[in-house]
Image: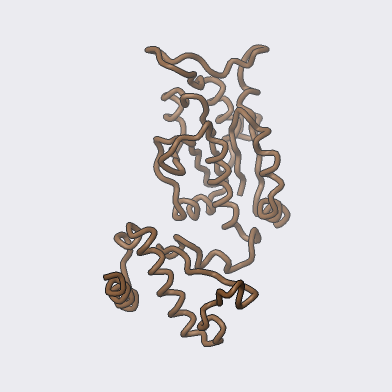
Amino acid sequence: MKISILTMFPQMFDSYLQGPVLQRAIRKESLKIEIIDIKDFAPGSYRHIDDSPFGGGAGMVMRCQPVLDALRYAQGTGDGSTQSGTAVSAAMTPAGRRFDQKTARRYAKLDHLILICGHYEGMDERIYRHVDEQISIGDYILTGGEIAAMAVSDAVIRLLPGAIREGSTSEESFENGLLEYPQYTQPAVYEGEAVPEVLLSGHHEKIRKWRLRESLRRTLLMRPDLLEQREMTAEEAEILEELAKERK
């Protein structure tokens, strides 16, 4: 797939582009990524990309022309023609729909994902009419959309073939609607604290049941809202009932 990121501050992505997972996806030819400087599409020597909001108020608003010209460039090949395949453009904005793992998996199946980084007080509202989706990574405000675009693209890239070891994502948090179970590695005892004995037993079924129980326990404690959305198996329902009794 190809990911295009439209930004006013392309230098923020310099170190991000050197990340090992991203570079591995590029080497495996699963990924092409480009950073497009919105300022390159602003007219004049001053590259006027923002202006004061109509109606007054603090801050500046990103103007339609440079953002939309950059978007049209990303949607094409640079010569006015259009690219084939499935494509989605998404603007990073606190007013957008919450980004989640389901969305990451949907994006990972695209041929082309275009992410637009807002800044200042945001973008002219008319810009949003030209994008497919508006995405937020949480209920808080960042200085700009660059960090959000990195988070979204990272979540997508790691799902691409060859980006990380096959099978590594299957039991992670949110993949099955639950938080991931606790993980341990060597040494078996560190400063008097031991790894749960069941993980050293080699008994695969006991390990599976322990991991499921701890996954449900962690979700119940940290993200009970996820359990409300999940259709439970009989085994999971029984474990949750036991965990609820433990908490009383």
